[in-house]
Amino acid sequence: MSSDSWPPKLKDWVAKCLGQMTDSNRMEAQAELRQVIADAFALHTLWTTDWDGVQLKSLLPKPLPVFNNSLKRKTNDSPIPSKKAKKNSLKNTSAPSTFDMNDQAALNLRAQRFQREHELERTKHLRNNGQSSLKVNHNTTHLFRDMSLSRSGSPFGVGVDEPEADPNVIDWDHFTIVGTSQELFKDYLRLTTEPKPEQIRPYAVLQKTLLELKKRWREKCSYNWICSQFKSLRQDLTVQRIKNDFTVQVYEIHARMALESGDMVEYNQCQATLKTLYELGIQGKVEEFTAYRILMLLHGRNRSELNLFVGQLTPRQKADSAVRHALAVQRAQAMGNYHSLFDLYLTAPNMGAYIMDHFIDRERIRALMVITKAYKTISLTFLTEELAFDSLDVARQFLVDHSAACFTNPREPDGKKTLDCKPAFPQLSQIFEEKYRKVIIKGAI
Figure 1 (cartoon, rainbow, N blue to C red):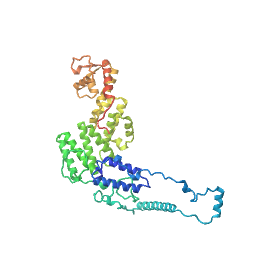
Figure 2 (cartoon, rainbow, N blue to C red):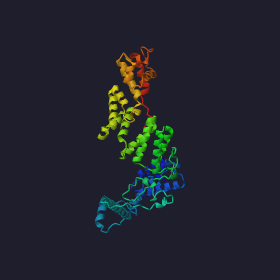
Figure 3 (cartoon, rainbow, N blue to C red):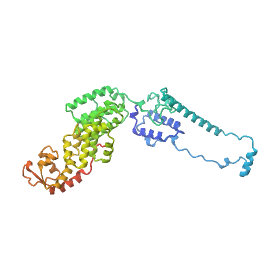
Figure 4 (cartoon, rainbow, N blue to C red):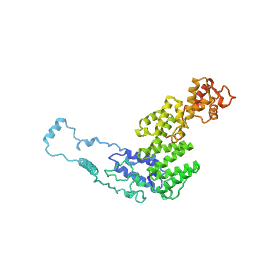
């Protein structure tokens, strides 16, 4: 059984229980926690149990002790002596008082605590000198030995008494699956049960799958099929906890395909995962996707996050041509320099133009609002060149679609048409408020 196949609610519940544990109840609570999970696994109820409603008895608040006032008095119920009488009694008494066994137990616990702290310091010193070694606690191995969940038999990896391990962190490495399937292609299906090794492709097969998918994409394969294959490929990597250069390559290729096909949902999912993988130090096309991220933040008009992200760029990233282009787009947009903005749109490196396609119409409306406010009339030819339209027909249709085709000579050919700016401006302003003021990004994470 793989830890990645544990229900999310079970993982959340385990984390919640670990956070509630204290030094006084940790051993008892972890033993009960293991037993509960073992019982649920044996009964096949890991996915059906309402874990939010499960409460460990060892984590319940302990009732406050009720002290009987009669215990504080002498057994013969004699009246409480005065302070002076107590003082004289202490002076006259030379025999030692009776030693309480509870005090002895407290002293023993204190001695054990100091001994443990000493052991921790000694082990830490040995580890720093390269002489330490991990020890596994096999006291609870019997709970999971029969189920073959892990080599150590405990969902917490290292034993509770091991000073080198954090008892609040579950060692998921013990539950990693290694696939055995040899099929190159597999449609994506969302996991609803624990994954089985015979349904998961191993690393070597996944590498062959990627090569075949790239070949199919060059042959103009259907994007819906190729997307399903890439999602199942990503799923197999996730289930087997594979995070390396190959993983980054898979997500980068899928992100580019999604951009080319206009699938912003899958692109944003890939971009979010790539950000995490890059932060782990795994090499990839970091600068290329940094530029894409800047353009996506410009598309979403998320200025606060954009400023924070740009402020964290390294000198190497800023020196990259794609990142410099994205920063130039940011500067042109902030300054309202639409002439520079559309020049940058035509010269976008890599696949930046695919992202700019999603907000270029909004910038065209903003530019038209400035132009129609400044001019009385303007030729359609000028607008076509200035706003980077593909042709005169595309520019005219754009004005028609946005209710701004107010030409002074509508019967003339497109090359001679002139836009009447005064009636066009209020139409453009209304369209901007209705259509472009709010930005909805599908699949945004």
